[in-house]
Image 1 (cartoon, rainbow, N blue to C red):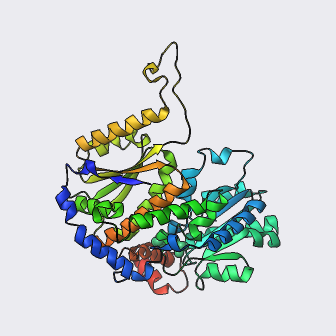
Image 2 (image 1 turned 90 degrees about the vertical axis):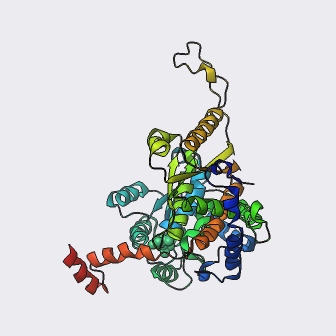
Length: 445
Ligand SMILES: O=P(O)(O)OC[C@H]1O[C@H](O)[C@H](O)[C@@H](O)[C@@H]1O
């Protein structure tokens, strides 16, 4: 089971200060459970894992099998909550050189619809030429421009390359039950489709087919992922005492640090496999808390890589940061530093040691240095990187986010600010219906 260690924050905030959150956090938890808080239309994620049926998982696995049988490459088209969760799990569990592996059992997973780069899309379509590829088109609203644009291009190429009949088999839609262009297209074309429940917002949707289908196509165990999340649901339940509830302690600690002027939380890992877990986490916390002119700014670094770029700032820059380190206890492979007779590099003092031992000492040394540099450190310990622990981590962050947002006093389940760039873009592109905004924006240029 993953666990949380906040000892290295206690030189900055006191246990007593954390204890003052006991009552408000209990109230926040009750509000989540009873649906009496802000944004209560979007609490479908709260008991999603424990209420997921085997039948639902089998349906997803069967669809994944169709894609596996018929595709060498599957493109996941989606943005924000419609791709980050899947990518976080897939990249955590995949071989670091997955794209280069031959004799594959599972399709290569590629991503699109998360940018509007012409070069990216051109090069993707070039790569897909003559490949047996399929598409998972993911959009809760079914109207997101980035995703719709990529899907239009991908669908055309898939149909031209593989024929309409096969295209219909290898294109799957994950979207709203009734609304949006993605739903209309899926129904008209007869694609297999999955529904994103109304009451699950994009950034909380990784344990719906949004995350589960791509993860299953990539060959990972979605039963274990859901089982892990359900375990964490129990560990963070309303009946668990405050001191024993990791999500409550995380929410309390980060809110207290924020109150003490620590405005930026940096999520830290020591393995590049977790890079997209940080990207997923940034959306989860950024969109949930960053509103009404408040909210901790969620940032991330990959270490030790970024110690050689951002390390200086973290050690000695403005003291407005704290870190949450995700520490993986046991790595999956064993590699020891070889003895070298000449020892030209002076590394013989490490001979015989596991590479991970070196990494762990880098981690410990970094933590101590940063704490000495006045950067409070939280530590989330993952026993190992597998589906079960990732499921636990996902739910831990989700429930802590709901609680934390309520403590902050915001609605953690909306994202009104995201619309501003969209309406400007539509106005600039003269989208029908935006005539007034088009005129107004032209006057600003
Ligand atoms: O799933 P979609 O409706 O396409 O939305 C994709 C993403 O973009 C939106 O603008 C929101 O800010 C995100 O919360 C969402 O995850």
